[in-house]
Length: 378
Length: 215
Image (cartoon, rainbow over all chains, first blue to last red; front, side, top):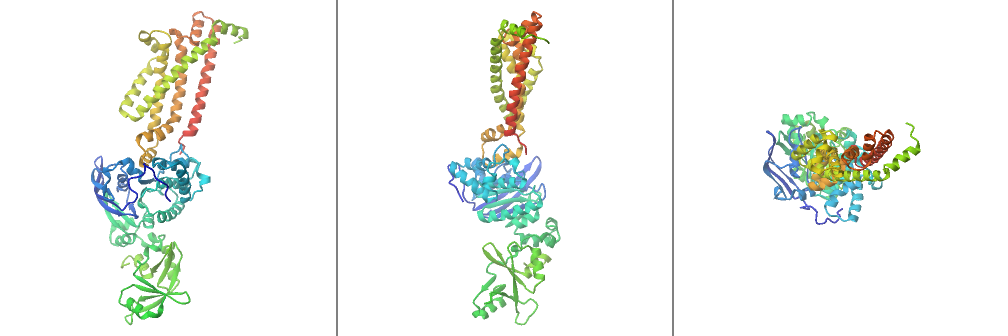
């Protein structure tokens, strides 16, 4: 993945932590960001969401020091960024904006090569890296290398913008509504590709958006900003649950749960590893049943000899021996909440397995219902 | 309008017009070279420093308001007569379009391009040399084209204050009321001016194709 960065390379190669501590910024007399504190851990994608004027872009621009905070501190790996040289700081941070900002007088490869030249890569490394990056963002190098930005469509330009931001392999990526100007179909396509890129590169990412679907789709955690303060910070599931009781979040998430959730991947409901056990050896089924009955685990997936899957769950209504066995259906990768609901409604299954990338995840019907009704625990 | 070839030839030889054309072009290119170097430097300066740039362009505007003949005559007490005041006047007069266009060109680069350059970790100097200046080139070229026309005019006018060149031939024709000389010199100066303008226009076109911001 990496070339050989020279002497001009960035200040840090990994982001272990990014902390904002009581950061404030005034513009004229209005308070753009007010006493904002939150922490991001390495490899995490935080989606910053909020209405216009909520301070999301200002927050982002303070991290690469395009603007300086009036109060408070920002730390990367525990080091205050105000003590770092802004030029080198910025070379360690990728930055993608809605307006893209490709340099119109340079070809695609010249645009992408800028951070590489600044980073002191050799000519051969630059050439290889450009092709590698173009392939990463699904553009054929031979076809697009020498084109001017004006000869590309909006979506292609944004891909090149992303490739340029990723060029010097910065450990931290700031993205300001990168897909905001694209039509819905293209936006969806780029989001999906971005999920793949994110998984491949495992970078720490701050992603500003005003689109709740995008935040739910991409964010490991979501930070809701309102008038420059942090209103909510948590994972997508928590946001949707909290939104049930909170009027502001409820408006933000669109109120009607199913309507908001329909296009969200059902994988966000995956039961954490350890809450469900997998058994291929059925000889100790007594122990397994005990584990479920005593609520040590929420369920146990049994892999039967005929390759069919069954799941043991605590029977919610029955008080008897309290355990019921139900069939398990399979979901394809990328199955959405709406599709999942319709699949469950046509079967008697109370659980499903989902093959996402490398892992097999279990989705429980009760979680899905809990999420959509917004009431219960998930 | 019926100028026989022999008459033209006669005027050409008599007034040493081959020689005068060379002198004329020397004056023209000397002035142009100075104005381009000076204009670009001052233009870049005004594109960087808002405050002083504004004052500079205002001053050049005032010079521009002085009629060109008056400017030439005003320079005589300072520089004497001949080539020096002519070149000085041409430079003073042609600075404005270059300085102004360079400054506007640098300032009108889309803010997100400069922001992106900054965010990529470029220094201000790198942003100037690799983004702002290249993108300002079409406008700068447009200013230079105007400067070419101005310079050609002033160099011709220099004939009346003792600079040599085609202006001197024209001046001779006027004082002797010789219509043939006036026409031959006048049309030849016109042809040269149009030629220079065409060359400048070509340059401008090439630059705007290469560096024009069409997005």
